[in-house]
Image (cartoon, rainbow, N blue to C red; front, side, top):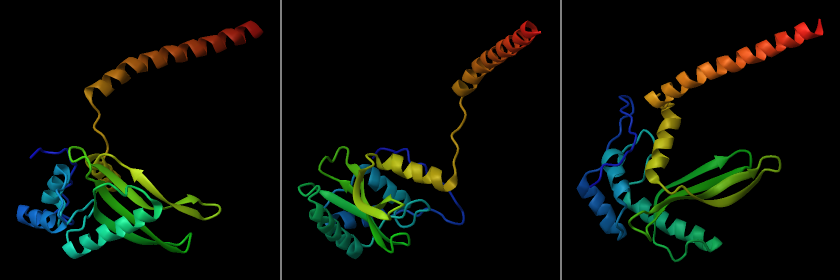
Length: 194
């Protein structure tokens, strides 16, 4: 199996705990699905407990989520002929609108080589009028999605590379020259006006 570029954070108070391969095989067998490789890798490292994005591993709940997702998408006639796998379902009360918003996180398994990550749920579309609508968002890459969540939660900053330093070394003299030209022009104008 490939090693995916997930950005896992070892956090002593909130560690990631993975699932055993046997547990993953059981879930796939019970759901009659083949999980994407990147999702299996994620389950192996953070399937039981994740400090970034928890996923469901209770087979009863997963089966329920599959039905709920199919029903929700059927209402809107979206992705009805596709092979889907819902791995997380959230329901949160939205006080601005005064009702519960549900969100489904799922893969479109119709293309097993590169299954896209989708999010389907209710989102506020107009804060002034408290409008909301259900939207289908294609996040495309599960690894990028998890890494974004990691960066957001742990406020991870990108490393400054040598290329960045070289760009600044080149740009600083340019800024200084431009500043000298501007100052020189202002002094020239003031001398002219005297």
